[in-house]
Amino acid sequence: MKQQVDRVVLADGTVVAYASAGAGRPLVYVMGWLTHLELSWEMPAERRLYEALARGGRLVRYDRAGSGLSAAVDRPPSMEFELEQLAAVAAVLGEPFDLMGTSMGAPVAVAWAAAHPGTVRRLVLYGGWVRGGDLSPPGVREHVLGLVESHWGLGSDVLTDIFAPDADRSSRAEIARYQRACSSAATARALLALSYELDVSDLLGRVRAPTLVVHRTGDRAAPVAQAEALAAGIDGARLELLPGRSHLPYAGDADALVRVVRRFLGLPLARRRSDGLTARQREVAALVSQGCTNREIATRLGIDERSAEGHVERIRLRLGFRSRAQIAAWYSAQ
Image 1 (tube, rainbow, N blue to C red):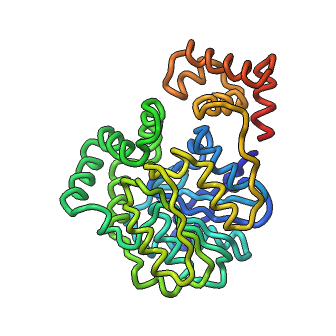
Image 2: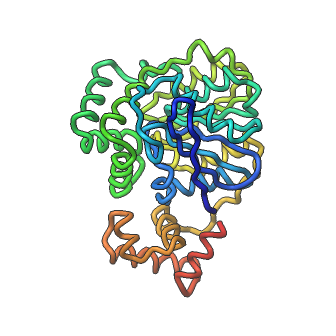
């Protein structure tokens, strides 16, 4: 599956990059905190999530201003600005859509659904919250904000440990590098501060779209009580709690999350994998399908070249293949 990147321009000249993958009924995906449309598509675990959500429909994602491929601006982050960017992307579609907000994107999705009920078919909220001020004590929030602003490298490492504790060491290192590549320290700090300020408690009662609230029970970044509050405040909302500690949707058991979301959206469920591959081996298979050499796989995953070669060989033996080309063809057909 390929994604196509394009751009929209807001009334004030802000340029917002968006990407589409798949074809059919649109699902607009409002991502959390820091993103990069191209780099995220190159990360095997994250790409697998997006491809799974796009199968049988059209997944539309965008980088918020100052992050990823979207241009930096002098305008400070705010809920109003968030909604303007979402409006510009929605205007491209020209039709009602399913809406999924993850992490910081969840309260933004709530605000949009409350203000534009006719545009949203179904609403999915993952890892979200009602009041950002309830995520952690004030002292902890100020410490984290200060760390991001003054020591972005250390700050990204600390936040990655919170966001993806289920990921292995090399994957966490890759996620931390990804965060630093998405934006400057100043932008990261400003967007993180906004996430603590967002409060949609007075908007929940105005949401009319059928809503699914899904959350991992051990999420350290957003307490499960916030998911319960979201579901309780939206009339008829369904709450689905999944085991796991990772806040990032593509970390941990992403397949379980995809199944719940696709079922709610009325999309056919993919057959469960019975290939016997580990999560790491599936990451390696994804990179083989992209034409990466063993050395390139090793660099991308933070392992040595011999380990990469061993993974490829075990994949080949497990699946009964004779070549890398067969691995690539098999993965691309998943």
